[in-house]
Amino acid sequence: MTTTLSAPARVGCPKRMVFGPCGGVRADGGCEVADHPCTFLADPAPPWDQPVPVPAPRPGSLLARAAAGPVVLTDLTVAPFDPASVRAVVAELAAVSDGLLLGEHQNRPDLPPTLLAAEVLAAGGRPWVTLACRDRNRLVLEQELAGLALVGVDGVLCVTGDGRGPGVRPGVTQVFDLDGPRLAELAARVGLSAAVPESPEAPPTAARPARVALKQQAGAALCVLNHVSGPARVAAFVQACRSEGATLPFLASVAVYTDERSARVLQAFPGLHLDAAAVQRVLAAPDPVEAGIAAAVAEARALLAVPGVVGVNLSGLASDRGVLAGARTKAEVARRIREGQA
Image 1 (cartoon, rainbow, N blue to C red):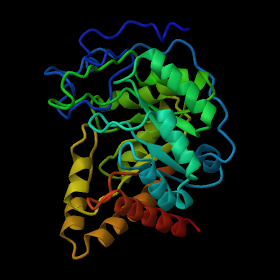
Image 2 (cartoon, helix red, strand yellow):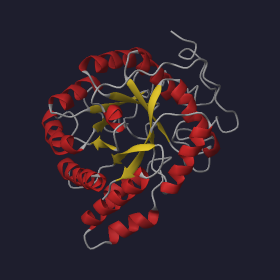
Image 3 (cartoon, rainbow, N blue to C red):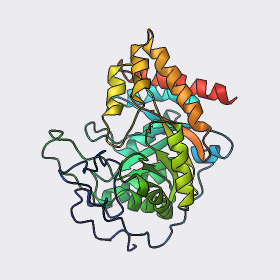
Image 4 (cartoon, rainbow, N blue to C red):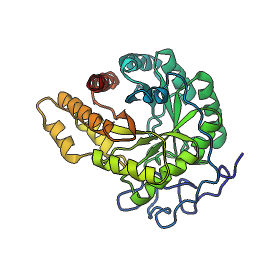
């Protein structure tokens, strides 16, 4: 279709990326998957050849609503392969969320994205569907994009995908026909709003703002920022992206945790940074659930004050007491954020 889709992969990158680096580069510059430095640290990615037109957002979608005020995108955590769980969790979250983010997990497979999105829509939610290049070749990604456009999702979060960890589904191959920016191009060309992630505090930090601008050229309509150490870091990063020519809006991630497990799961992801002191305060509080909710609301309000940030992504399990407890916790965070904006 275009030269970017067929461009040669970077030699030495286990994810076969062209427009890297991924968001999982470790703090020491090491590759997330292999035992060597990220190949993009010393040799930047090539420029994007030709900008891809960004389709207009669906009426009433999160992107459309963002033009009128702050929006909330909430992680959808459900029991795998369980439509009843989808209905129960969506019932908790739909009324207080402008969009629900369906994840793609390397250790927890679920229903095919189009089918899961249809279940969320039927339950009254507005899905944004994560598509990862790890487990699907280009043909299957094209099929999923066509299906998602047909069922009417609000948008797609286009990610290269984190590498499968040692011992996780041994013997299952990892595909990586495409990387996130080239997947965003495919999404935009079928008329879907493409969101892309970025990790401001993952090496090479100085190159990350230009990568956001490249992703916008690839067709991205929205950038979802990974967790960082504080709002000031988000503000500096957004300004740096603007200096590189990126004009797209940003969602900033808010960590929602109320116990040891929900905090540690977030802290374990490469490229993700939480305020360790804030985590400790929540875990040591007499009522960690209330403390976790209050901390998330405070973080969200601070991030929403950053110019260019049009909303927040409520991210994480939120609770180790099951998916419904987690959904109710995130719903309460969303309600308090909205009360503060009223």
